[in-house]
Length: 461
Image 1: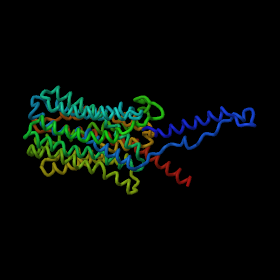
Image 2 (image 1 turned 180 degrees about the horizontal axis):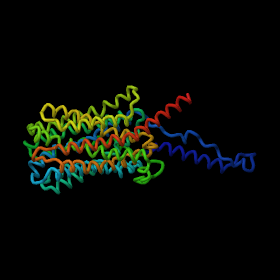
Image 3 (image 1 turned 180 degrees about the vertical axis):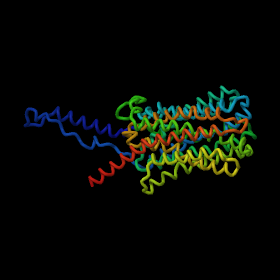
Image 4 (image 1 turned 90 degrees about the vertical axis):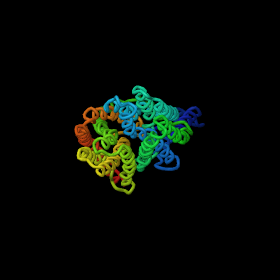
């Protein structure tokens, strides 16, 4: 992320001082000695450390909370929309076809950051936030007027997806730039906005649709989106964003050739190939396979999103307690738990089992969506704060490919008419296993780096 503008101002002052010293020789001195420039001030070249807290930093966390509510919160609600589209609005479309709407939306939430991350690094935080929030709110209002598949795809898939993606990665980046040791916890707190959105929006949609209709149910959600947008912009647009000291390309292809970073982003691809499958199909599975009521099926999605609140925060509290646990360790451990959950999903056949499984997956999903961002901030993956925005965008862009194709593949593998989801469930468990295997490489690299840092600190003390 950007270096504080005061630093650049200090460098400029030092440069002016040197020029004045060269222009006015000291009386009584001749030759080269009289033109010797003043020594530079060492403090101006020292790296500026994030404040790791303070009022402004925690206000940014609050703004991030609202951003994730308007991005991931909307995205994680698609399971409720999918069930409605399948039975009411677009009953002539297959589950796989309808899944493309949510896949496009979720893909754009992750992939647009490849552009907006570096733009934030360059100081364009204000326009990024204004444009992104406008598209989310406008897209939600447009969904309420949609009656055809292509209209829903354009409004929900592309407009809302692009807007949410515009604000998503900058939120991770600006929070990361304000914290050091508290960074994982701060990111976890902000990302709970997605959990709150994932609880509120499905319940609003389910409760309002029978009484006021699909259009006003969606418009009510859009007004909530607008309501949280206002304080977000007030916090983040009070002053221009700070610029990084050196402009960078939107993408750095050389980063993908780094063995550690390259393996990490491929692991994220496999992880997110599986990630959205349960979130998209949990409601449909409960209604069709477990034979729950439609109301209960919709509430399962809210229950799962509620559990994600704890997954986004509790694992990172271990670091605050002084335990030597890093985000990459958290990520690989819970990915391994994910393998067990996804394969065990095939055995869920009762209402009680469905509730327990939904809570477990909800907690896990909260970990898996926050740990990658916290992990990307590690020096083995992002060498400096100035590249966090770009590296986050690149890693999420790779993950977005998995998001795009995961749910539609599952939709093609599942036979909803026969209540047969086994092939989709086995597919999701297998690709999660691939993610765990690949994550061993960055895990070992981070462990070696941390051990070296501790050894150097001990030697210098």
